[in-house]
Image (tube, rainbow, N blue to C red; front, side, top):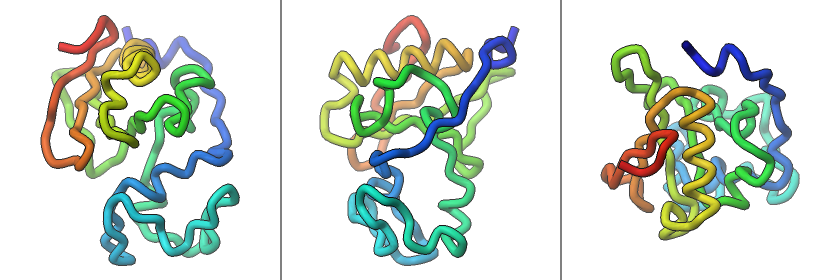
Length: 147
């Protein structure tokens, strides 16, 4: 059974997180990974929200969508878990999500591991953990822990 069907999700406000505006490359505006987006006003958000690139419009942070607990905010736990169309992978009937470290070794932290485990359990999915530079898969996380 898909656990997402039984959980009521409440969309969250990004607040001051905005990590997606920093850690990912955005080809449409030639923004490099791990650099602030030129349209990011820290603590406020996108200064050109209505005209933001397609990659930004498609981006879906699982925390913002309502998965996990409040402390699973990417800026707090150090892990950003996404469900982005271009990065979706299927493992049978289970959706697989991609997690990126906001800071090095966040995957080893108690908060980072707990956030991934909660999202994995709530979505009945596997989390693919990418290394700090998003260059390679370093591990997989299922609801019952890192495999």
